[in-house]
Amino acid sequence: MISLSLYQRALRLYPTLHREQFGEEMIAVFRELQAEMATKGMFAWNRFCARELAGVMAGALREHWRVLGGDHFWRLFSNRRFTMHTEFRFPKATAGLMIIILAGVILAIQRGEAIQRSLPYANPHVGPIHPVPSNLLPGIVIGLAFFYAAGLIGWAILFALRRSGVHRLDETSAK
Amino acid sequence: MEVLPLTQPVLLILLSLAGQPRHGYSILKDVEQMSDGRVVLSTGTLYGALRRLLEEEWIERIKEQDSSRGRQAYRLTTRGRRNLQLEVGRMKQLTRLANLRIAVKEA
Image (cartoon, rainbow over all chains, first blue to last red; front, side, top):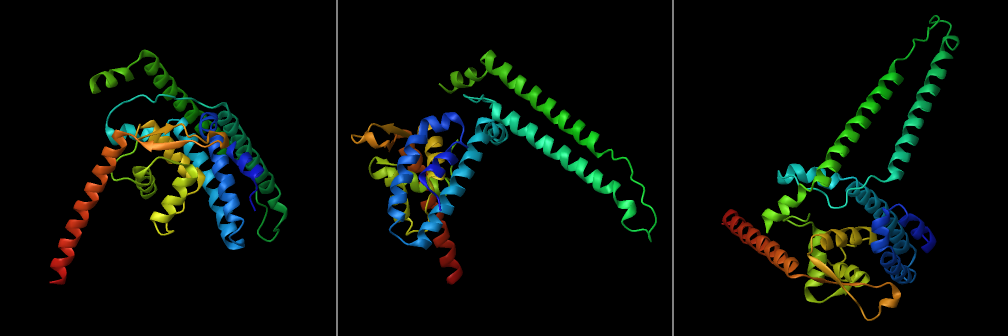
């Protein structure tokens, strides 16, 4: 069951700009739909709840992807033209999320290694299993650091190009 | 950027606005009615599409008299109407070709 307050909380998943532009309207439309669905029985109500939750989550992901320049990235290939995104921003929340994911991966690896160390005593018939020092963790850290650095360099290049005003040349030629 | 061919939700949203300006709820209901209930958009899908269409200037926002309830109405721009006509023309051509091919096969 999805209430208005839950829907409002789910809307917080959207980027701020989108919320400011459409948040109030989305809530108003949701209210009207909610009132209509309340009269249509449990089956229709459940379908409505599932649709709305899935829609908001997928929509929020899509909008974050767009803010990060994902749409623009694919457009570079589809149009074979280099046009700058008008509102390229790197949300602070994304950096926080990436750190949480990294911490989760490191914790999972450490936990795995602890389980591995406990294995030699689990099956004495096979013989002692000696834990092998894992080189997976440094590999993952180096890999992630590499991708972060590559992303940062890419972002810096796009930012510098945008500051230089290259994207306006395309608008000029279009006119 | 919206490019032809349009996705079904976008096409239906544009068709909904082709007749008259509408606000969000009205668009949702009209899309559902036009598609005989096959396409039921969520608010997330609708406002994602509206945002893209506004950005591409295919539609524009207009002030509605009853704006106290957070309602905003949308209408097609000239560019949006032209692109919709292009898409419908493309579909007509495709339908004509399909009919021809099917007729040949049946004969």
